[in-house]
Length: 482
Ligand code: FAD
Ligand code: NAD
Image 1 (cartoon, rainbow, N blue to C red):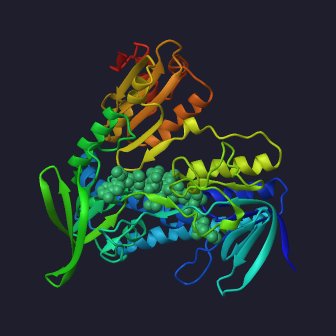
Image 2 (cartoon, helix red, strand yellow):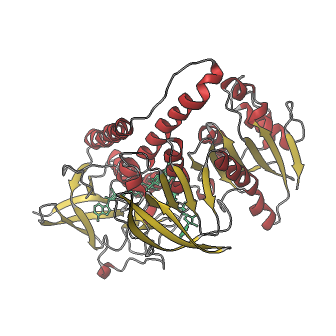
Image 3 (cartoon, rainbow, N blue to C red):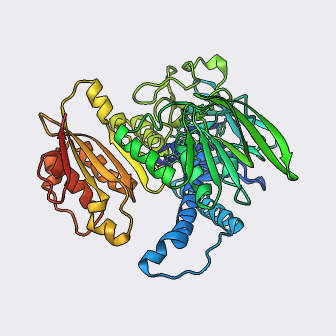
């Protein structure tokens, strides 16, 4: 008998599992199809984010940060550690346990909310039909009043450096090294390149990042990006800008596999040898296998499913959320889209505010931003005030001996409304969220200035930057009017 649902969700990453849970909470009979299998052939929910993305990368960033703390920074607090060493296998095993705990958690949430998890591959075959191919090859047709496609994205591969998941790996392979590579190459100085490059550099790899563009982090406020370049350099990450990779050749050196990478830069043709190479040049939407062409769902020229502001495709009753549609490829953006679609199916008026998607790079210090940066405000001709405050002047940052970075707040020169915030510093992600909330409520810099902040806390740097934007910081904040 054909199974019938109110909603069928394809994919259980952050966009899909959140959509499915919210649909079920709203009373819809909901199924969520997931094809991901563990190495021992068990279905796992959570998608890229939980299995090979946000969570495992942060587990390794936290482990490697603690290693650097123990090795280099605890002595300043009077703590003697003796010889500090890293057990890579134990670190990778811990990461696997964190992942497993969280993916099991999604299974529990599905059960608690009565979402039916279906193992296998889903394909949209009509306005109201999805075919499910189970892992043993059986095919089943599901009927659904509404379909939500949340099939996510996969790493982009480039012809000069074919992935073998041994010497040349993608981000997934870079989370599984069993020993610290002596020389690690990374192609792409984007978010993954910087985060995973940092992990292995902290553990002792000589890391070289080859970036095709001439500017580091073009999406980041220039002043902050300049600070990033200086800090990463000090941490031992060699970032070669304007480096275009043209080819690679695997070889054996001292009986060990290596890869020779050819690239061109302003000085001509170059070659560099690595023990491991990570290709981190972006991700692409996984749209080609999830839709039958006959359904007529429109894709854009890069393969993203075309949707409106409410994530509706051009086919009535079919929605798409997360990495498979336009916008930043971020877990929290996909989750909010999942909630929005579920609630709109229940006739609520929920929207996503795409102007306030926070971005974070989880290096140390962290880099976090929201809203407009100075370059964007200048190009659109908006007059603005800038308030900055360095963590070097924060009592709490000094107490923690972690003083790198600053908070930069941009406010409209006429209305004082906050237009953007850019932070480089310890806990920047959590600090930024205060401004995301403030901006969601259309706060002014003065509103933040008039708010009481607990002392001593890193968040006082936000308070001071807001005061500085209006020219009256108490502790050396800096104001500029542009
Ligand atoms: P995915 O998480 O990709 O999930 C899609 C799911 O659909 C997968 O489980 C897949 O198996 C399944 N699927 C696909 N096709 C089918 C089909 N036909 N049938 C059944 N199932 C199917 N973002 C952040 O916000 N913060 C971070 O710190 C962060 N760190 C990251 C670190 C790394 C190394 C990587 C690679 C990504 C990171 N991201 C981060 C990005 C984040 O992981 C993605 O934006 C997010 O996972 C997208 O969610 P999604 O639900 O759209 O897709
Ligand atoms: P990215 O788009 O952030 O960076 C890719 C970089 O590779 C860019 O700087 C690009 O110029 C460069 N590049 C592209 N082709 C190249 C080539 N042939 N040679 C040299 N450089 C080249 O992509 P990513 O780092 O792969 O991450 C993918 C997605 O995952 C991103 O959209 C990101 O949002 C998401 N992600 C987010 C987080 C986070 O939120 N902290 C962490 C990891 C990944």
